[in-house]
Image (cartoon, rainbow, N blue to C red; front, side, top):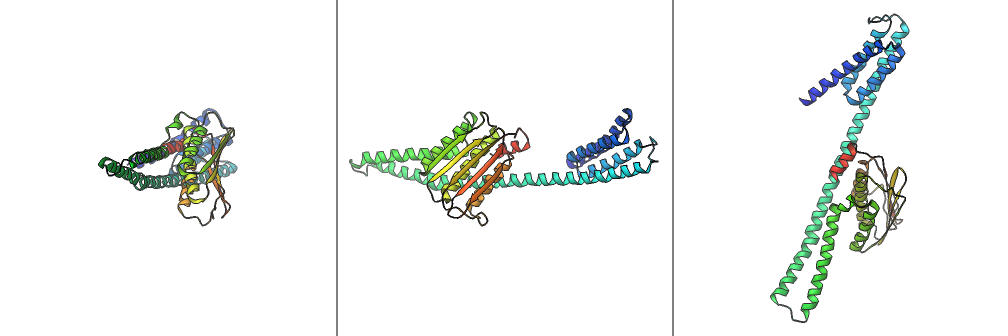
Length: 337
């Protein structure tokens, strides 16, 4: 029912707008050429906001209104054959414009739907990975700690072993705590709310490198003092996914991260000198991770590229413009992150 009323309102506006413009043109004594230009603008605006049917209706009404303005005025009869040709050309042009605008709108809506679906699927895979980490890694290690503590409590160890066992339990507990913090950090990074993106990324690279026992070099240059929250969160998630991918698949222990800025955009580069991969044939979890990053960047109007060859390493490059603002895509990015 809502769709019906929305269509009805669009059709009503498609009729009223050209008619109102006709009155304005008559009151201001515009000639036919000026009126035609104004009607084209109205048709374009209506095509951008309304349906294809309402666009056709506005084109028909606009053509009739132009005929009404052409000499003799206040009559649908047109004396000058050139005016007939001009009105016919306007009508055909209006239909073409309506069709093109409707087609572009449909493609944009499909693209938004596709990107949103890709991000939702990627988020679900990420939740499954985190659940698996909690169950298979964190859960098992907690169980082992409980078993060892019960052994100490039961007094099944001799006095010599107790201090060393306590030291081992303490070390395992600290490692477990750090891994839980890292996992929580992957889910949400509150530091993005009050720290610059470069500081947060540098800290993450340090913590992630220590957790995975790898070397991650981080460099930043010429970054703006203020980075929109949507862009900061997007780049941080891309960095997380890129490093996870690189550590899992590259088979090397050294990685480079660069975050550079210009007056109107930010560039993030993650590179390694590992085994590389074939971009055309990648269908593994690495390929899913790349699609996740690409979909996430689209939500903030960014671009994504990968350079890699077998045995020559890989480089991931993300570029995000700083003119995001608070448009629809920014809202979607916040909701899905």
